[in-house]
Length: 452
Image 1 (cartoon, rainbow, N blue to C red):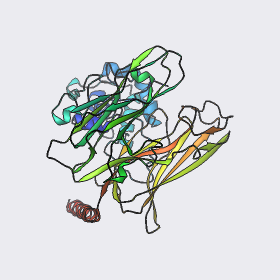
Image 2 (image 1 turned 30 degrees about the vertical axis):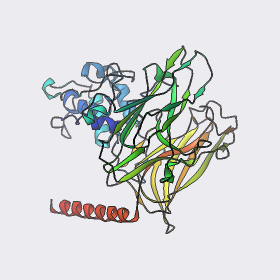
Image 3 (image 1 turned 90 degrees about the vertical axis):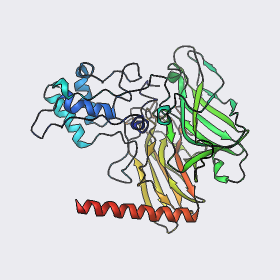
Image 4 (image 1 turned 45 degrees about the vertical axis):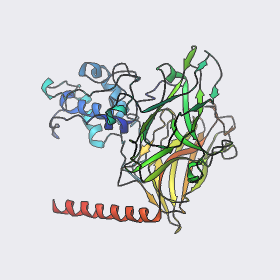
């Protein structure tokens, strides 16, 4: 597995941790961009989350001296939109996200013009203040709540992945230790060490508890695990989730975490654990709505069947049994993954495209978190339709062998076709109220814009 920026590459968390760097007045249309005035603010906002000293990107871009040798490479990557990694098609579906790390056309042109002009440094006085980042193994979200670490940390049983060993799926069970119900407002999940990131392909934490009052808590695709809801999933490019105000996940007394961890060969003996960091609402604060992470799409062995030298589409459907707000969309495929869409088939029969990731990259399992006013509000009875496209041809540079038949499986050389989708459920009264409130807010913004 390529050692890309696997953990910290989620701008939603970065933006929550520090204010965006203030920049001096940008260069005018005819002025030459400089690093200190024009480029450094862009790198701080969209790149430093990975590209900084002692992090896991291949180089730091925090200073002019660090960035200047890479100027031409930076230009090539941003022009082709390979970096920062963001695979949502900008011509269809929802375009407002809390964690949008993509560059605007203007930002790309600023970087291109800077490089073409010889990558000048500019006036040191124009340099914005440096961003403050946690250390390599620091908990990203702790600062949000005035803490140094989560309220509850649950660790998997240690596993040693031997050098050269085949892929391993490690599925221990850990007690949460809770003796009373507690509501969760944020979650982080990560390999416990830097070396652990070399071997951890993905890690899923399922919450196992007896919860008959909320059937949606049972993951519809959890297989043989009884009453097990998906609590959190970590993969390349993702680390944590923050619940929206008035929503959360409920953990009950006696609950357990059922781990599903995929370890791969790291070229040396590595022992690691996966750490689940949980941030709880203060006692007495109970959110009104409950959020559930669902697995949607073609999630079983018969759902993925790709002939050699073929591009093939696969579909799966998920029925909303209650009204809900879709919070996020995270495509999950392997090396032959090409694209994935999520559509809402409304009870009226109307179909609406919510999101389309048209350039899926296995090295980056981005979770696209919708902005507050853009997160889809959908009535019960809506079908969420997940369509995945796999490219099993030689045109796919990531394809290990286009001449083999590929089916569903856990190995990286096998395939999957599902999305992780967070849904916050609400009753009819709350759903109607949220629709009306959003309509009023939009009308107010329109009025304000017209008055400007």
